[in-house]
View 1 (cartoon, rainbow, N blue to C red):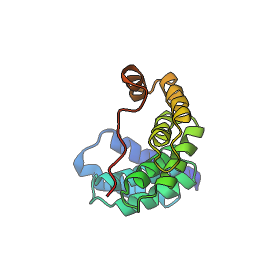
View 2: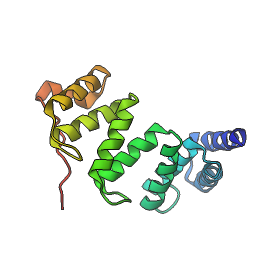
View 3: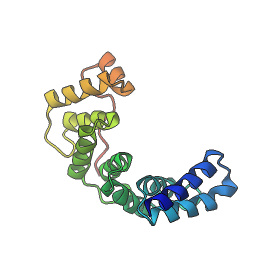
View 4: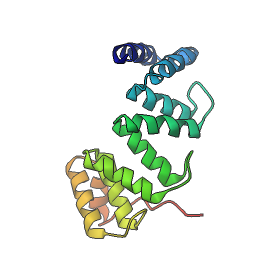
Length: 168
């Protein structure tokens, strides 16, 4: 089954590589087919297409469902996308503690963007207690790994330039 899902996913990738709007329905159908086999990359990409309304209407709730399945299958980008969704309340009820836990989980696997985001959460107390020294350590690690925003922050101040989202 995994080989069949891989073959279907690769067909979708080849078609998407020369993306034309008229091909979107066929690409979506192939992604749906591979996702039915729980192919992690297909689940993530299909969720992204649904989230951004590419070739279909935007459907945040469906995107979250697909990203959850991809994340459960070990897809790191899907887990990071979920963290963003939970922080912003996009397609799911905002859950800052869950967002922080997902950022930390990705950071623990070396995902550089997540290192920065987890540091930002610690700096502002988003979903966790304020912990400026721990934030600074995560920023330093992200900076050392080449994270551009972390490098710019270091040049301008001791903290992240991006403010936390407004709360209703």
